[in-house]
Image (tube, rainbow, N blue to C red; front, side, top):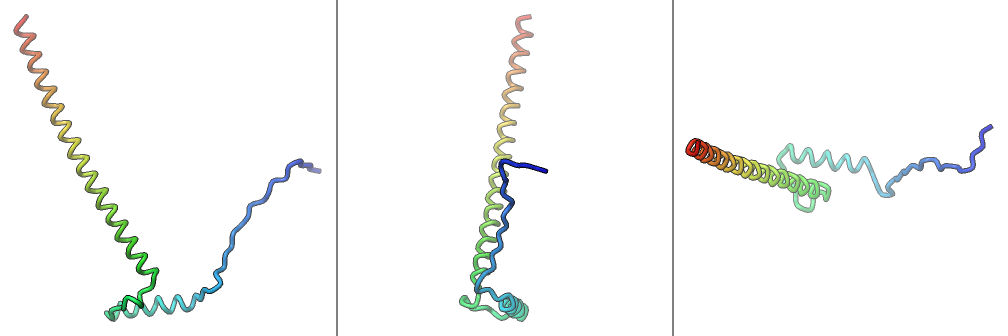
Length: 106
């Protein structure tokens, strides 16, 4: 027999069923949009669903973010290359001047 002083709670699950959701209506609307786009019929601004507008804005925002990141990486890499070239020039100059000084006083 197993005795426990402290009982641990089991995991809870979350299940939410929307009150006003008609899956068939959503599928019909999506299919109608798809057919209209295939036929080349322009959708009115009112006909476009909120989901489509939000999804489009998010895609543009995400694509814009990646463009900015790509530009910043290019700038960073260019800056790094210029700094390395400058340091190599300085190192070469110091090496040559110290070699002249050593040969001059030996």
